[in-house]
Image (cartoon, rainbow, N blue to C red; front, top):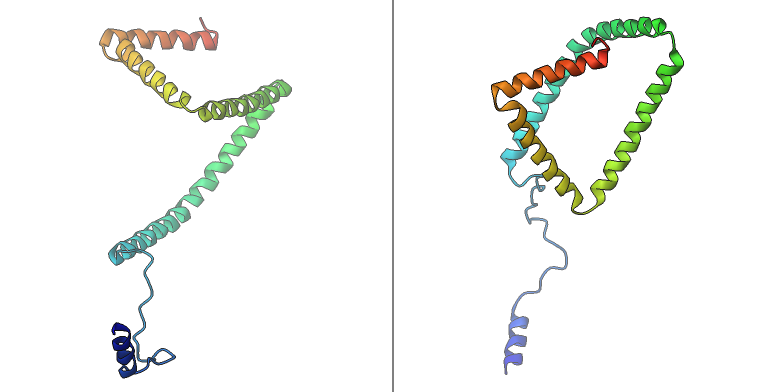
Length: 159
């Protein structure tokens, strides 16, 4: 009986058009952001940054080129004054290799699951100890200053 009632209702209802009606309103394009205010505020902020960047680049490029030329000339004079250039190149190459190896070592340590967090704890502990030992009290700050001065003299060879 229910089947017969459904069949009669389907016969009484008009048939749906096979194509969509052109009178159906088109939906507006979906915004990139859910909040339209957020999107406009970002666009305004970006345009302000870009305009500031353009003006700062224009003003600093003149100063930078003058400073860069002076720095380049100073470096050229210092390089010409160096007597043993091969030693300087050897030390420079060694420093680059040392930085490269240390970055590989830090990457390997960082890939071990718990080790980076343990290293952070060790660093925080040492920082706390250093602050307590050398920076908290006036007498210990004076001791640190004298230690730094003696280290500078040892490095410079004036001691």
